[in-house]
Image 1 (tube, rainbow, N blue to C red):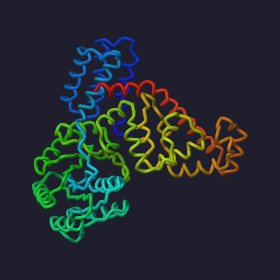
Image 2: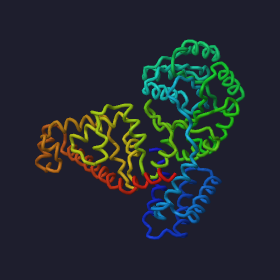
Image 3: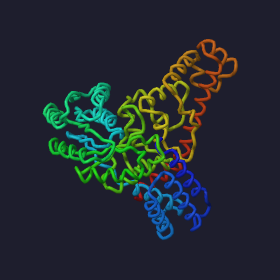
Image 4: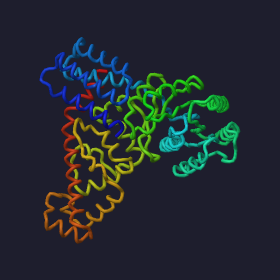
Length: 439
């Protein structure tokens, strides 16, 4: 998941408060100090952190809890609301005919994000076309061509043409009957006047419905200046933050961009074309606090898998057999990295070992071979698999006994995790429902 360190620190702070028998001034001040440390370590601007801290402290000590809500739940609700406010509002994303202009510096992940965006809209059932207006970076056209081929989306561009404005004119004419047109513009290593002038001209030719800025999360608080400069030039109305899985500065980028009032539309946290996620401040903070984001989970599941491939209710109940586990892991694998998917479930403060997420396609194939050597009774009740059965399964599948034990160990880890989720349903999820009613 993105911002693992921040998420862990926030969950620890909330868990500590939830465990206190009395929530008084001392408890609130301790919570605020923990939040300050977590946010500053995530590169959130100190001034913003202090403002948020003061607001939480003041509200927690002065506001009366709503009827039927304990002081503890009231304080946690305030923390949740203030963190959502810190992230700013989400940018608008329409599932209607539109032209989107992509802006950003070189190295921000703009071209890759263009491919991911094309994938996103196509999965929503829309006809998509992409224009490559990046005539500056060698290989830009070929990279975008490869991405568009992968997602089966047409591309207009000419690697031997230096006039980006000419390419945009040709592309707009070619895609005049296409619902979604995405224009990938060229970037530079810095905000040069030449770059700004060209994107202003492209903006005038294409007259896009949206002008979205792609920013590398590693920039941290410096993202604010990029967003401001591009906004002054063409009027940015949405920001996409990339590489959220590989930096500790993601909190700084998120909060810095939110200050510009542009609105974050998507975040990217991976290299594949599927690793693009619609940004929702409520769901994002909910996940950071370990409360899950079932709305995002259901949306992703509906996009990539059919109902008969995975029973989401079975996962939430935490009751499944080895047979079910393989079927569900196979379906979940289509939704992206398992760690991202699990972060959308209401885990509360529960920690899952990193090796539980290491389910590669190779391992899944090996697991399938092993399970093919099991009896129906063993698949339905793995508890009966003793030493002699392990040996028989090992010989039948042609794998070492250690591989069979690894499969059983993984099954037990997932079973415990999902049982824990079931318990959290009566705590963290109940609290989230109350938060939603009280906002």
